[in-house]
Length: 70
Image (cartoon, rainbow, N blue to C red; front, side):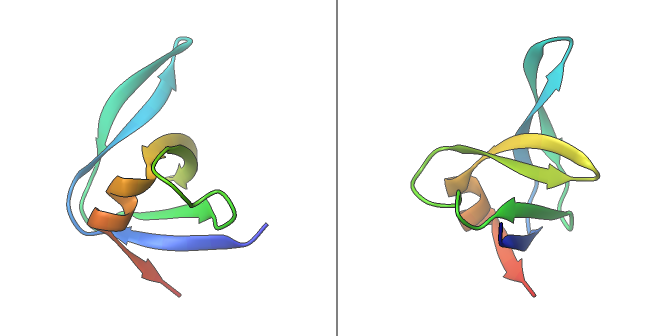
């Protein structure tokens, strides 16, 4: 699975699983996330890894508020 990394350039909402429910929290500016490049298409929620946690983010938010890094 090809992992792609993105730097978040402005605070962005992510959904965290807490006590069996998804709760919205902000991923701060400057954070690095990893995403499976195969799932990063369309406008949908996708799993990303941030700070060793698996969270859900919208692909549209990642495209508009993130920058791909090598």
